[in-house]
Length: 161
Image (cartoon, rainbow, N blue to C red; front, top):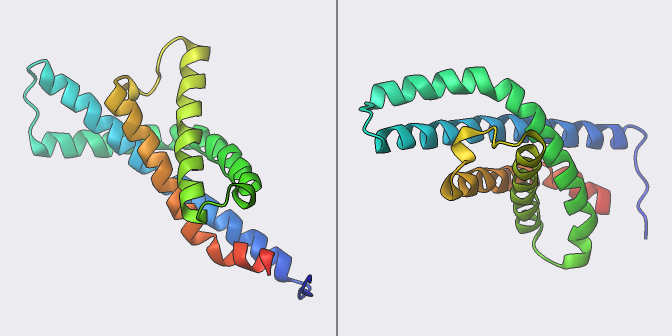
């Protein structure tokens, strides 16, 4: 049975989904850049550079301020495609919604990084050049999926009911 909706209900639902997505992209981008920054500094420390905690924090804040705005455009495109695909597949795969979006977010970031590397000939996200750094970026994408699943839950449940 399809329930009747109030005239403005669809618009409110759409605004909630957009807001959930924007928040997800912002948080995911900041976490991804922060993780990348830490992996780059760990690589430098591995080469013998002495980097103190204060310097690590300063570099991370600098990286987030400089890289997150641009990186967020790529993250937004990847997560949009990943979440659309997840939304299509979720009812068919019978996994819990948060797990489905976590998988979708992680896979979307993995695909984005791999496509960027293939097109540009180099992994543009320096912190993702090692297997562990790449995995960290994917894990941040999974966290983004969990955030989106939580923030969009109310709008999604209204769409179903």
